[in-house]
Amino acid sequence: MTAAPVISAKDLSLVFHTGDGDVHALKDVTLDIEKGEFVSFIGPSGCGKTTFLRCIAGLEQPTGGTLTVNGLSPDAARRARAYGYVFQAAGLYPWRTIGGNIRLPLEIMGFSRAEQEERVARVLELVELSGFEKKFPWQLSGGMQQRASIARALSFDADILLMDEPFGALDEIVRDRLNEELLQLWARTEKTIGFVTHSIPEAVYLSTKIVVMSPRPGRITDVIDSPLPRERPLDIRDSREFIEIAHRVRDGLRAGHAEEAL
Image 1: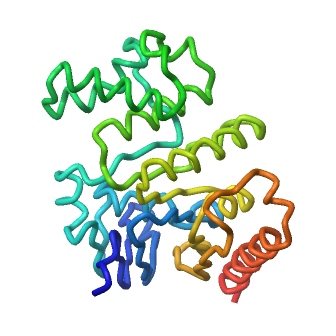
Image 2 (image 1 turned 90 degrees about the vertical axis):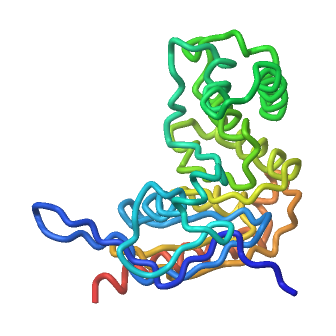
């Protein structure tokens, strides 16, 4: 018997009602995400990528269709702590140390002090920040702050990790390094990852599945199952397979713009 998808959307729509009129953010989005997949969402600004991720997280309420996370409503999955969420900015409290920032959700959830310390040490090792728990965010580089943010999202060991363009503000060298580290972390933890990006190379390099979205109202124009191996050195980006997938993503983005113009 085939396992049920971890995340399942069917004919999902979302309309924001504003003083200037309705804004159709998502329209008829149907998608299944299986356990252990790394799924990237790519599309132009304002296409609904982040909105869809926020719907999964129970932070936005769809106005049509259905959406389940681990077989539950997104709100119920949020209360069950089914996911960790990494935002575009690291969002670390400057008055708390790195360890203190990572402990925060554990404190809220009522973990014992000993359990908090064990989990903080474990996730800092996962993101290669062991020894930095007593540093403050302003003492770390932007890339290190984002790794600390990922560690915080991993601290309570949810099976799903939702990431909203976490490396978009970083320079290319740091971004490449964090892409490599994220793939290694995903291989070690076997989590299901939903990842929003504007970068075609990043989407192709990281993902087992790439979801291409159209300009608003956000619709899916293509879903690409990657044939690339799960272990991927950076130089795989020079391979013919990688370039072919990148061309298909670009074609999907162009198709979305062409439909908008009609």
